[in-house]
Every structure is written in C-alpha cells, then in structure tokens.
Image (cartoon, rainbow, N blue to C red; front, side, top):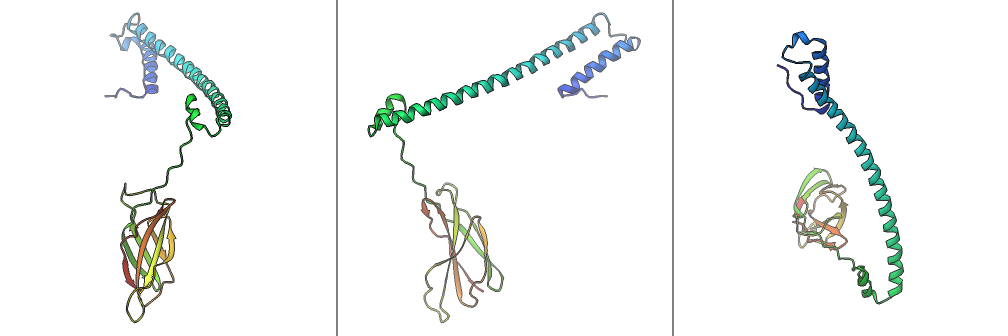
Length: 211
C-alpha cells in the first residue's frame, strides 16, 4: 500500500495525478462521482493554487517592505548620531544634561577580568630536548576569557639545591604545545599561566621532568 506524502510538492503532485486519473478512467473508479466528488477535488486543488500564489505575492511584498523599513531605519540612525554629536558639544563638561534627551554620559570601559588558573598540566617527553605539554583551561566561571598561555620553566642546579627563577620558554593559543631545545640532565619544572588584558592568572600546577 502506497504511503500518503508529507511534502507539500508531493501532495500537490498526487492531487493532480488523482484528478487526471479519475478523469481518464471513470469506469475503474465507480465510487468517484465526476459531477460531485471530482469537481470538489478540482475545486480544492484550485483553492490551494490560489492561496499559494497569494502567499508568493505576500512574501515578495514583505521583502520589499522590509528593505524599505531598513532604509528608513538607517536614515533615522544617521540623523540621531549627528544630533547626539552636536548635543555632546553643546553641553560640554555638563554631560549629565544629556540625560534630558535619553543619552547619558558614556560609561567608563569596564576592566577586563583576570583569567582563572590553568589546570592539570601534564608533560610527555617526546625525544631529546623535546617535551609535549598538555593542560586544561581554567574552570568555567573562574575568570575572564584567556587570550594566550605562557609557558614557564625553571631548573635545579646540577649539584642539587634550590631551583632557579622561573623563565618564559614559550606561548600558546591552545591548551597544548611542544617545546624543543630544552636542557638535558637537570631536574626541570614547568608551569602554565593564562593571560588576557586584565592580567595574568595564578600559575597551574608544577610538573617536574628530567630529559
């Protein structure tokens, strides 16, 4: 058994085929009365066609109306900007007077929020002097958007003792990077900092390796 179509075009195509078939083979479909049922089916298809054409015309008219509205809105915006610029000059330092026309003083730019702490730094040795570093971004909601990551390293003197100062050895835009040319032999420690316009985050966990 055939399945009734769902798509609009397929429904219309089936209606046309039904009308053509009933008209050409009335003896094979005695329950279809050509004077009532067939006429009603043809009227229904004609009503749909009329409504479809009206819809097309309405959509075209709506597009024209939308374009005209947008053009007028652009003109209104340009005029408003011109008048506001002149009004800002008129009031000078008394910028609070701009509130009379719904245009308050410009708010000072908000300070950027420092990123949160990078997490779970994990080093993987890939060869002599080569290290792959992978970490997770700051926890969601812990700070501002990260612009870049800074990779820092410090090393322990050959004879042991306290580690030296932290020094930058690379930057990354993603949460992974490969550093090459790293010292072989001494104990090394790495950490990651997240940076944006608001400042530098708390360092990540420290990861120790010996290459």
